[in-house]
Structures are given as C-alpha cells and as structure tokens.
Image 1 (cartoon, rainbow, N blue to C red):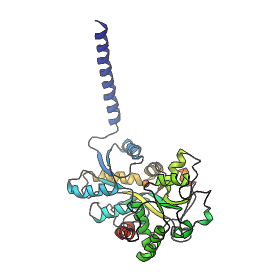
Image 2 (cartoon, rainbow, N blue to C red):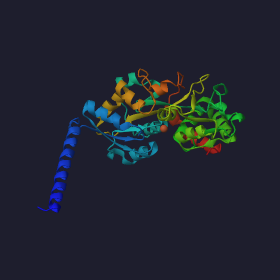
Image 3 (tube, protein in one colour):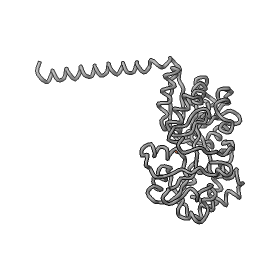
Length: 344
Ligand code: FE
C-alpha cells in the first residue's frame, strides 16, 4: 500500500467515524422526544426562544418546531392557509396583532384554569383566544448628562417646545408606535390624541426604526430624550454595565406607563391542540415565565414570577390598566391619525 492509498483509507475511516458520532448525537437528542408528539409554531418572537422550547421538550417529550416572521406576515399566512395550516400556535410580539388574529377567527378559545390563574385579566383576550406571556414597557429614556428626571413626567409632556429637536421616536409604520398611539386614543379620544401626535411632529422629532439604534443615538449625543421599550436598555446594559442611558417610568402621576405584551394563542385549525395548550400553560408558569421573559429582559406576565435582576433594578412602577386588546381595536384609528398628523 503506497502513501496515497493509506491517506484515502484514513479519510474513509474518518468519515465513517464522524457519521457514527452524528447518528449517536441524533439519537441522544431524540431520547427526549416521544413518538409523534409535536407542536408547530409560527412566531415573530425570535429572541432566545430556542432554549425555552428545548427545556419544554426535555420536560415533556413533546418536540417543538417553529417558523419565524413578522407579526403581520405570519397572521396573514395563517389566514391564507386556513384549515390547511400546519401551525398549532401563533406567538406575536404586539397585542394589536393578537387581537386582529382573534377577530379574524384564526385563534381558538381556550378554557384553562391554569391560564386564568397565571395571566392577569387585562393581559389576555376577554374571549380567551390569546394570552399575554411577557410585559414590555414602552417608556421614556434619557441621557443623564443633558436631562434630569425632574424635567420628565408623561409621554404627553414630551410635546412641550423645550424638547424641540431633542426627542427620538420610532416611525409610524412600526406596531410599537401604533399601539402607543392607540393607548393615547384610549386615554384622550381621537382629537386629544391627534393634538399630542401633532405636538411630536411640531417638535421635529427624530425618527429611527430600531429601538437599539435609538438608544445608541442617545448615547452618542443625537437627541437627549427618547421613547423605547425597556428591554432594549436591559440588553445594552448586559453587554456594557456603564451604558449611559437611564429609564424613566412615564405617566406615574396618572394612568401609568404604556405596556404591551408578547403573547400567544392556539390556532383555530390546530392538529396538536392538546400539546399546544400544554406548552401555553407551561409558558405561563414559573419555569416557562422565567426562561421566556428573562431571556429578553421582559417582565413576566405572571405576577408571581420575579423579574430578571437587570430590569428589577429599574425600580417599581405602575402600568396603564387598560385591556391591551384595545390596541388592536384602535389600531386602524391610530394609523389614520398618524397619517393625518403628518407623523412619518
Ligand atoms: Fe422588540
């Protein structure tokens, strides 16, 4: 046997060895999965969902498969697929889209005392078609070198001319902006909310379509105050504990800070309904909540579960008690209002 043959033989042996190890690893993983036990999910939430699903599989033997996309795209896909859909569960990162999915008949009612007990009434559908799983607070962020917390109070007060050219927000096309404006309509009526949005426009508010980039812009000195979801600051602080931006809980003297959810519902045509309900209930319990909310620095929807230490350090606050389904009901009004007011 010459050197060339010896080398080829070694390559063949190596391939067989690797393939063997591969089969072993595959089997080791499959040990947790019970035959035919599966859930298919459409999810617009993608931050750290995989370890959460893996833990559920480990505990129950039910395999979780998921497809990601935007809230609206996945909702429209469910609608187009109708009874042929493979999805058993729809996970969205905005109450407006969950409400619309419920209205459009894409989600089934779920009667579960576990879900009733774990999720507060204002964070779930009045007809039990969707349930909030994490709370995300859209509130005021500021650079402490240029703004003192004494200058801050409410979302509405950011229309004061003293903030002209200094405020950064998200564009009108994003569901976060639309739900925030829906909450202003619920609090002030259409005309009152429009006057507030016109105030943002008059203040030449800087629009940036990423909450992370908004916070980085604030840190870099482009603007002094902003409105973002709280967990983006949590994430930046985890990477850099000296990140200079501070959170201010808005509207503490009146209705409380604007809160949105990520949440889920069981699809109307789910083929694995029992398993999907099992996952939904598990996600609302202590184990699931800690993993699901904690992985993204969100507040658990279940009030019995503690928040991640980085966001617990942001301090106590109160939130708007409005049923978040209202963001869906008012979404069309909010979009029209933003257009009328010239908010891009
Ligand atoms: Fe987000």
